[in-house]
Length: 223
Image (cartoon, rainbow, N blue to C red):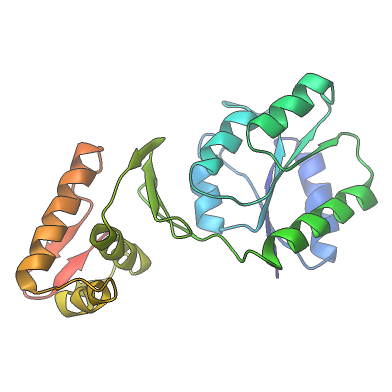
């Protein structure tokens, strides 16, 4: 079942879209907090985003740019402002299509289905891990936090990926070392400690304080 994230502040339009799309077996999440659109996007992990332009707090172009920093998921703009400037802005900001309101339901459905086929029949799903608003894009191994990109080494990325995949649970040092062996690097207890300490320092410098916790004689976790 494909998941669609609907960012629309007009509840009548949002409810109508949800009703129609659910009849075609799409799973729908309608944005609830228009200050936390990126966090809701990450938590829902949608296959496609339907994005209004005129929104409370920040407009759809802003959220499109934020999503583009962590994901290549298809984004379709929906707007009653269908002049050429808005069409150009939508594409320039990273949108994949633009549909003017009021729209024909059959046209919207056809465009959604075509985008999903093109994206996932060939490319597969883009996965993003999120914790405390830090976004780890599995597709290209990029970590972002509040719009800033945090460069990671291969080992640091592997450690963070495993910890975020199991957030809230302790990951043993043995399990982390086994994951690091997949990078073809020589790994021992000291190597792991050095990598974790370097990763912590990078996260701390970016504002992610106490992101990784140590559990003595057990391992590490994020919570």
